[in-house]
Amino acid sequence: MAKRYPSFVCQECGAVYNRWKGKCEACGGWNTIVEEAGSASPMAGPAATRPSRAKGRIFPLEGLSGETKEAPRTPSGIAELDRVTGGGFVHGSIILLGGDPGIGKSTLLMQASAALANRGERVAYISGEEAVAQVRLRAERLGLGQAPVELASETNVEDIIATLSQGRPPALAIIDSIQTMWTETVESAPGTVTQVRGSAQALIRFAKTTGTAVILVGHVTKDGQIAGPRVVEHMVDAVVSFEGDTGHHFRILRAVKNRFGPTDEIGVFEMSDQGLREVPNPSELFLAGRDMATAGTAVFAGMEGTRPLLVEIQALVAPTSLGTPRRAVVGWDQSRLSMVLAVLEAHGGLKLGMHDVYLNVAGGLRITEPAADLAAAAALVSSLSGNPLPPDTVYFGEMGLSGAIRPVAQEQARLKEAAKLGFSSAVSPQPRLDKAKTSKSERLPLATSSIGHITDLVAGIAARRRKAS
Image (tube, rainbow, N blue to C red; front, side, top):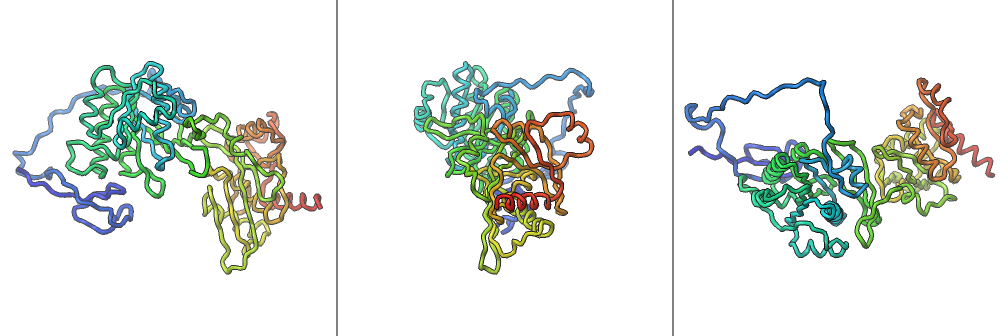
């Protein structure tokens, strides 16, 4: 018998070593390397006893030109979920859904499975963390107790695949969660990197051969990343993150990866007593309760995927007696705020070295778009000068280190969303030369004030203050 060689696998990133180490060289994690039983060395034994590879099968090669068919999809019945997935669940696809504990992952999947089952599709919900009675209690609380969803509490992957293979293939199978699954082909404890990878590979083979769409629920780490090896994210077809704050009643479903649809698309839900409710117009939700007469607030016209989204950015600039002023930000990049403050001091003529700066994106939404630079700068200048900004104006534009305001994409979609919500003007970058002629012929949905440098923004807010006085 060939000798079995142990392997040491990092439980955070999946890196493999031939001996134990205190620190993983791949991800830098401490005490994350665990010994796992390995297989026999592929080079063990004499050459005559090694298994020889059989002759490969010849498969046809096709050219780029030819008939293309869109992947068949099964709509979930939830419009926001279909928006994120690209129009529904693709047959034979694997979706990895991650989110914080208690954020509403199981609630969303229960509502989606009930909507599919009520349309006559076969749906299976496999729970590895809860008993069948607990899942039924959640369904009854949501008013979905009569939906014909097949339930089971099982963690063995081979038993799950054998059960689901009986009869008509399910249109959707939900595995909650992948960290609790284990396969007999791997000699390792459930939840380890090897077991998660082996279980995911077996479920992927089942999905591809039967055409069943499979959703894998994944735990998240302290940093908000999906726990387990990164190779699982590369194996699946889509990675969806369910985000939200326990202090707010809405949830964001964000597509991080999608082979069959757009990425960075979001769906907005509101948590209620009857489960998750779709929010067709999230801009109204994020702007609800806005104080229009307060200095330091600016409305940012942003884009999340293909959806325009208006959100309020709040800033507070206060004098400090500390040697090192504080810089706190919620919902935005900390380094991005530092860059905007440096540009305002170097090119805007503002003195912020002896002031504490606090920046917040209202509603708990997190913004990663560079187009929010101009709105953040406007809120900071407004808070420092004590002059409120016009309540019917939106701001968007990217700021360079030289103080220049650079154009951003999808300007028309931003302006149309602002006009639909009652805004009458916008402060935006100057259009590019190649679009200057076309912009003259196009009628903008609202009045725009184009600026090319950060000094124009500071001068405009200062002139408004003098006019008010």
